Image 1 (tube, one colour):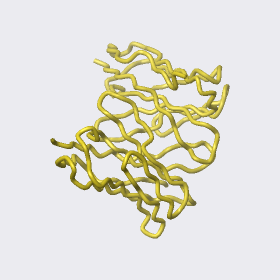
Image 2 (cartoon, chains in turn blue, orange):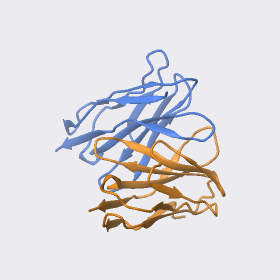
Image 3 (cartoon, one colour):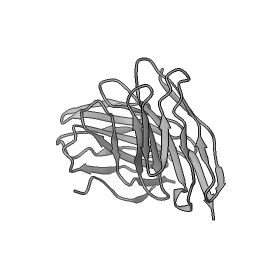
Image 4 (cartoon, chains in turn green, cyan):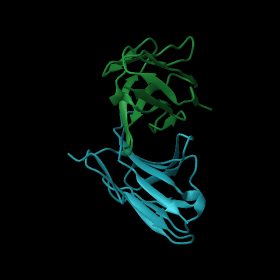
Length: 112
Length: 113
């Protein structure tokens, strides 16, 4: 069945460091791919998405490219801030009912 | 436009008690979902609904029930609470489109002791 694997955390970075959080997927067909972010004590918010191969999703300085050949959707940001500290979830969807399959989440902690 | 709202925010139950977690959305979304989030385990789908009067099981439905009498509301019922149901519960909704974007509520933190 469909599944998502993302790197385990926590990831601890200093402010202005480069961020990569790896995400790979297994799926039949052509799923859409998402990154959601969860700030402490809050629900999940959509960060970015890509709906077909080679699409690049971007938002708030974060980027991820839908790579069908490597079945990957890695999240990157050139210069992280303390305010980026959160849990990041990779997810995929497909099928008629819009169901999402989530990875286990990666905790990012950015230190000043 | 409040989006997806959930009540209560926190609840402590004793084993064997029952309760209903409320979820309401004001975006006229057809699709609604209930997830539970356990530490280090990501989100697991409990139940979902593709419209009023239609519900179906997700990955982990045992111990839960749902109903969908209106487009706006999608309550989750726990009949006989067990410690294994200690978790954070999230409700979400989405349009019936090809982009599959889901909008999440703030969550309910439930402890069963």
